[in-house]
Every structure is written in structure tokens, then in C-alpha cells.
Length: 119
Image (cartoon, rainbow, N blue to C red; front, side, top):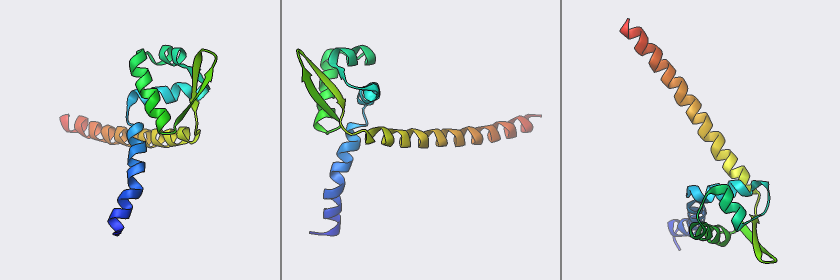
């Protein structure tokens, strides 16, 4: 087995994991479950997602191991199975915030240069 082939085999599940998180609706679901387990009706009310769409995303998140489901009476409750997901999201959000701050600084420099040039 070549180095490239083994690297690809290792990276494929990583890519699949990030693919699961690349959908806004799924991130909404993960975000609303930060406060604890919820049933489908509660998640739907919180996210505004329709029943069919919500069910599809819950299935994908559960299959990826991000969520777990627990039947309770006539309802099924979903919860985050790995709280590390929140650290991952926080890292990404922090990095994006830093980038936006840097872009804002660059824009201010450009804007002040542009204002000076117009005088």
C-alpha cells in the first residue's frame, strides 16, 4: 500500500465528518442541543425546520455519531453524544472572527487612504 493510498484512507472519514457539519441546518440542530436533550418537536420549534427535513438531518447526525437518540415514552430525545463538537465549532468561530477583524482593519486602512486621496 502506498503512502498516498494510506493517507487517503485515513483522511476519508475526516472529510466525511466535516461534510456532515457543512450543512447549516445541521449546525442549527447541534447549536440548539447545546443546552441539553430535546425531542423532535422541540428541535423543530427551535430551528424552524420542517418535519421531513429535520428527520433527514437528525438521521445523518446520528449516523455520524454526533448525536445519540433515546426513546422516552412516545417521544425520541436527541442529544449531543460528543461534547467536543462544541470546542471544534468554537475554534472555527474564533478563527473566522479573527479573520473578519483583520479584514475590517484592512478595510479601514484602505478607506482612510481612499479618503486622503480624494482631498
